[in-house]
Length: 86
Image 1: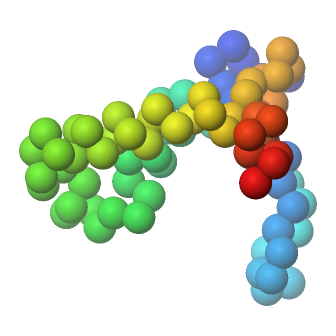
Image 2: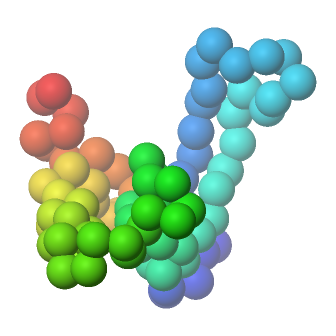
């Protein structure tokens, strides 16, 4: 069982080499999720180089979470109805 401040995601991979686990379970904190949202797709030296523009970009990314992700009572992350329709 996950802690109240953690999320749980079960995953299945596709098109990865056989050396990778095809299925598994990830557990991570809200802080780790926020960090991943900010740094994904950004070069390390680029994360906050644009001042307030970088902050607004992060806010945009974080604001999309409620549109596409829901948290089940067990802590698992599930797709919202909107995400399943796409």
